[in-house]
Length: 377
Image (cartoon, rainbow, N blue to C red; front, side):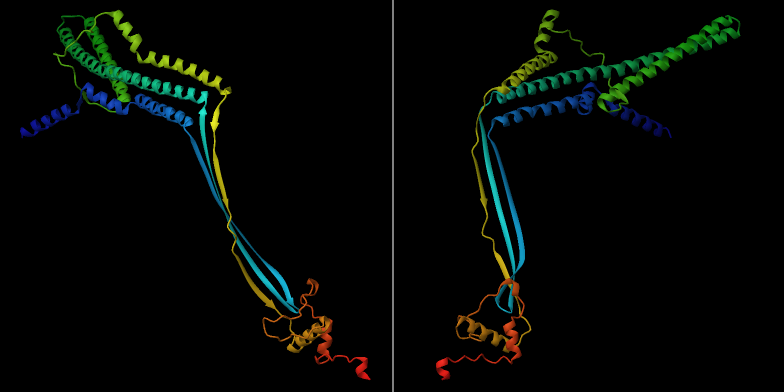
């Protein structure tokens, strides 16, 4: 029955030791979680892109474009070959046009671009200086927060010990008052002292909570226990022990001063870059382009329309046409031979001619050749 409380106490002790953090561990957490240092790192990474962008303006600029256009057209067209025959054509045309162009631009001399490149290099250096200054400020803030928590813990322990001592004095004053050794005023003074000590404990707890919240803001971690410096911690004096030398070193190596000097140089370069916008620039820009349009493939389909006329009417029409042109009729002639077929005008596409109607009414008899007067005799 005794071993269980002992084991539980040992586990609590080990867990408290495991949860303790030293100053180096707290600083490592702050490097990954502090919003100020992360903002400085993001600004540094963004400023690093200024130099490649400025250098890209000096390098050759190659641009290219390409396009393809396809046109589709279709429609009907009627054509009369021999009345009353009309042939309709469906014409479909697909056209594809391809274009491409390549432009190469090389800046031979541009004072504005070179000044922009110089300004970008100093902007990168300024961002690096600002980041290193933020790192130094982070070290200072972590150390201040770490030791503020330890100081608040010590203050709380001291106030709690004072409260316990004053509470014992109040108990003794009450006992002495009961036996008549002291007056009631002494008891009231002991009570007032006890209340003051209790108020001091409350203030110490509030100070500890504030210090822990400030450290939590930097590290984003809640620590149950922080390692305290040991009694054998060395306290070294600054070397060299000369204030004037430290002032000179800070004037040369202080990162905030270096960033301010770089900012002044960037402002001067910006003024020179603005002034150089009106200067002459020399640029070489060869270009090449091409347009390709192959001959469009066409698709033609025909539809033949005929009037409701008998073969005898077509023979009569052919005989009539042969008489008009003075040639024998070729109606019914085999394909490939020349025929005397006159193309009708568009106004009479499907209308049956009057002479064909009269021939049909007479039974479509062949036209008799009139004999000459000499033969009549």
